[in-house]
Amino acid sequence: MPLLRTLAGALLLAVTTAAAAAPADRCDDATFLRRATLDLLGRQPTPDEIEPFLADAAADKRSAAVDRMLADPAWARTWARYFRDVILFRRSDDRALAMALPLERFFEARLRDDASWAALAHDMITATGSPAERGETAIIMAQMGETADVAAEMSRVFLGVQIQCAQCHDHFTDRWKRRQFHEFAAFFPRVEIRRGMGTGLDRFEVVSRDEPPRRGKGAKPANALRGELEHRMPDRDDPSRPGTVVTPTFFLTGASLPTGTSDMRRRRTVARWISVTDNPWFARAIVNRVHAELVGDGFYAGIDDLGPDREPRDPDTLAALCRTFVAADHDLRVLFRAVTALPAYQTASRSRSHAGRVAAGVTCPQRLRADQAFAQVLRALGAEEAEAAGRGPAGRGTQVRAPRNAFEQAFGFDPSLPREEVAGTIPQALLLMNSQPLARALDAERRSTVLGRLLAEHGDDRAVADALHLRTLARHATPDELQACVDHVRATGDRADAFEDVFWALVNSAEFIHRK
Picture: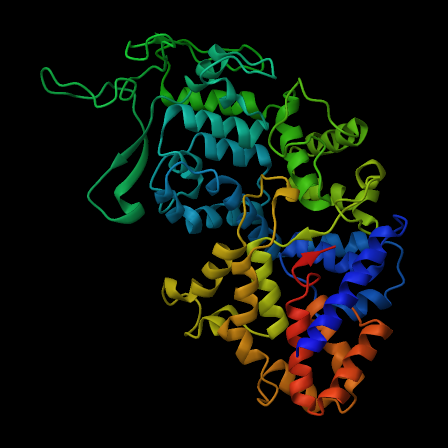
């Protein structure tokens, strides 16, 4: 086994290095299909999907494949999990993690129903109700209703502007002033998280509060800035003082509402001002985010750190994508279709460190997100999620999610971080090497496993090696890879043990856990 692991690692490294050094030509069909299927459906293609696509001679087969994927319910499910992570990784309170499933369900249902990005923004900015039932309350819950934190997240997620950097002082590098941050926060002081007698999420409710709190005679609030109907900008010289009441004002345009305006009118109004078509930052923020996730880089250096004082790369392509997106009424499927049609998405990938990659506008290998990594393992093993859990059918309690949770803990990362800041970890390697479902599936002596069936069906070692490559890497093995596998079988003298090694090496390869 150590010999093959070394050979497989060296071979995969050589293939990756050669691809990185090659000119950025159009990628081959197998690479494109795996790339798009992982990006859009959160899994890699099956052998039954690969062969017809490779045999298809139609000039438009790539765009047709993307259309089919965007119509697949798995697209909504995959991107629901992506946006779940966008919101919950920046939580200020770990109790918000209990919102993971309600938030997934909200996004999945709305994406499946073709809700526009503007409609989704409106839902989340104006949300009220039980977090257990209303996933759209997630941004408010993730910040536990703290006025300044909620305002900062609304700006980051929907405008790509990190205005919270001006909370305590005027921004050092951008034009935003301290007063502008607090005027924006003044749209959210009347949002309250009410606590009840239940347990877990059931004890919370997001409500609008337009009446002052009732207090006994002489009672004082625990925090002088909470419980008031208007937001106060703290006195920077003397934080113990009450601070100055500020009017709700949108920092991008200067449009404002008077103090005394009700909570829902404030939030509905600012939701409209944020998502209106003539606000360029609403479209730029999501276009930059989707481009960064699919291609590897955004048009701005920060995925969620845009603004009028920052210069984008390739402004012409950014502007064209934004025009397409806005003209389609902020239809996310239209945006995904446009990004996957870009030359940058269609080319062979180059390593992130390649000197000319960004200037050439080509994609780069990306580490899989936790949900993609989990699906990758299940597909390779031919297992269902309930099987991997070792329990009954999905839906019988939360324990059936245990293996998925393990992958989310090991492979999860904040999707708003630049990908160069995301690296592999020892827990990830240990999970792939030592997980019980993986060990069971690698057992070549059991006819019920993928490997057991392949060995029983094929007497040709090259056919088995190629089938394992198709299952794990969604491509046919190269001649050198086939020869390495055959040589290992001969050297080992035990066909079953040798192919257990091959399967193990492929599942633990860098190519398996990346999309290129």
